[in-house]
Amino acid sequence: MHKPIILIGGTAGTGKTTLAHNLCSLLNIDHRLGTGFIREIVRSQTTPEKDECLFEYTFRADDPVAHLVHQSERLYNSINACIDRAKREGTSLVIEGNHLIPRLYYNHAVDLYVVLSTPNLDIHQRQLQGLTHAARELTSSDIDNVRKIGTYLEQECERFSVQQISYPYNLNEIVERIK
Image: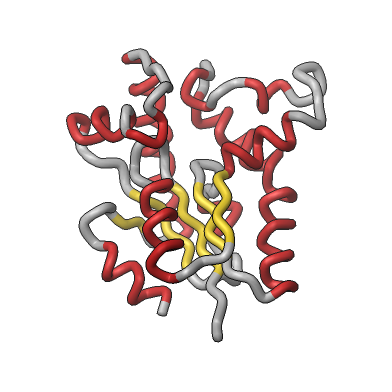
């Protein structure tokens, strides 16, 4: 039985966590990780003086795109270690998070790597305050920064020929791509 490895990128509020949860249920995936939680683990092993970028949300940074790239580069080895372990052990894995930027993951040998597209502003604002991040408070500046990250990811998908999809209305199509 083939055990898929799936990477789901996208800015905050695009449905990454929801899609990962649905894929885990539908495909009986063994493990699911969020890059935000990987960041918390790495952060616990360092200090703000050594790794300042890990101690601030990307959408609260002065330059959210540069901050995202810096965090993503810092987390790359840890995320890769998780992918390599899943391959070694023959276990299925979904990793989701905004740190899965195209320039770092476009050529990874995984079963599916997609980046979720940023919805229109009204839908996006509702999704940003969804159930998976219900306690997160966002300012209008935070939302603007999230959308800047979304624009950056769209450009990077184009640049590196990474598939960008809109979610949640096409779950069956996504499952068929994995199979």
